[in-house]
Length: 379
Image 1 (cartoon, rainbow, N blue to C red):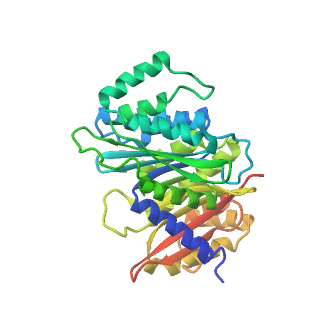
Image 2 (spheres, rainbow, N blue to C red):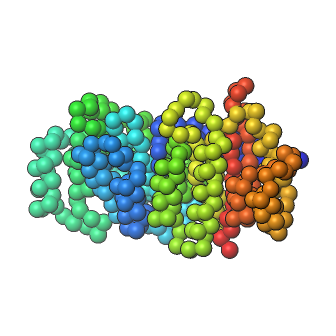
Image 3 (cartoon, rainbow, N blue to C red):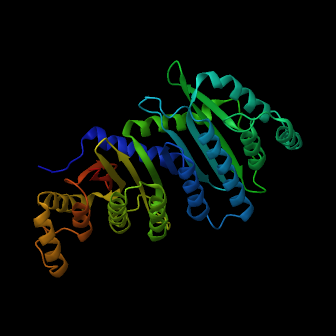
């Protein structure tokens, strides 16, 4: 029997999530409560890692400034965090496609605020560049302030700095709350601007659908990327800045991530030819009792039997046996192949709690999609 084998439903979810992010070129997603500290970390991360260094400086500055306004807008206007709704977490999505960046935020708001917010966005969308500048000045001088910030200043700044209209949608949750999705696009200079109709919410349907998927699995942070040594360092810096206050848990997650990323870089296979690295997915989700670290990547069908034996052999040992086997494996490379296990897989098992869960979803005659899950207890 294959120990740690993920059930078909879970297997399907992870691959579906991977394909959804691949299809829409989504690079980075954060789902959770938006605090000043979290938004500061996302901004610092974008400045150093997420926004590509080869992009023109003016474009990078625009992206950063729009992110500032979008994240501040969420932090100020998200609904009461004390609500007992199961899926109250907001979402931030960054997408890069060709010479454009797409920034989308989603957060819970009270239904009573929808009419006012809709009016503000429509007013901003109805203005050209000159009118926006004049309106910005007018609001600064005469706009009424509330306990949630300025009278639409953040929306005005997002429109001005992106040079585009703001797309938005509301999705009702219950009689009191709705999710508010706000989307903008920042094109590089000289690139034709979007002709998307800001009154057409269809552009945001895939974000809404993705948000539901993340809520279903209780995903905290997710990366869809080409995994190489450079991206490994970037992603690790994100976890260091953004995940957890418990130092011991953060250290275990950090160290496990290193091994799981290396597993993709060294043993994953390219479904399509690319020089950027190995296509893969990584996300952290949680339950009441543990954090779940998940990776997904393509693998040659010819490797599956051997890898399955490695995983089952490692899963069949207790921690004392694992420790001894790790030392043996370090010193002796002439081990029977039926019991052979890479040091990376042993390391992941030693650093985490319980068996490693895995699955292989057949794609075609040559490739399958390999999913690996490790668990870290909160206790």
